[in-house]
Image (cartoon, rainbow, N blue to C red; front, side, top):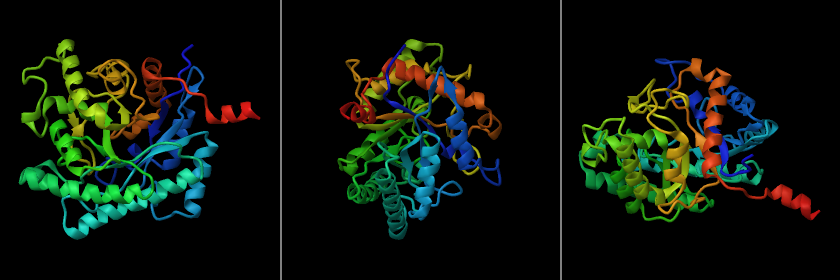
Length: 354
């Protein structure tokens, strides 16, 4: 039996909200997302934790007193931990007015306060604060040089705030965020920020679209006439992409994609998240995760303590089936079997000392 216990396996709760709404489907409650996560089990293995979005209707980011204690009790009662937190920065784009950019930084500050309290209460042993530019590629393209400078300045201010709380910020690589919509623009933005506590959040579904140059054709890695049956070319493309972005990667989402874009509700079109068992999926999930989790020499980077599945914009019908989460957990277990490691748990070590 494979004894790897790291990286820890997390499920995201925000798919219960993102892409939902009046013009789509109703949100799925936080409690339901937690319960479906906790109930998933494969050969005695369960999810270790959840990554959560700090936004309504799941979480009130301003409720840092009794509300956080209730959250901790609820999550802990299901034998789960909390990892990465998504900062609700979309009301103040990083390329916005002075006031909007200040609002962006303030939301990061609130997220860091929330995260630090979760750490103090012992439910959040690892994880980062996830951000994006909250700006469109189209707006960025009007003045690329100054757009990147403005995003970088906002991110720098956010990094300085996060540093006060011992937090790192992970910029999500997704084709719908300006300045982050291609692998080259992502690296340009991160380099322009120039802070030690910022990195990249890789999502296997979103980064697959980087290979195809969606929203920035000049940064395409795979040829225009690429045939998905050419696994050799896909592998080389993944190697090129991950060699460039892996050194920045501090947070990681396991995912599947069928090579298309998708959007629901108010969410812009981005890389489609597919079921782990989707026959149209273009990725070999366990194998291809290794390009992110291992360096160019094949050695484990151990750059983060947990990995997460993001089922963003899955339909409610799919998310309400327990088999969905069992299949996802099974896929993540395979990733850990191939690219994980073993560490003695702190509590076990403490028990041994006693």
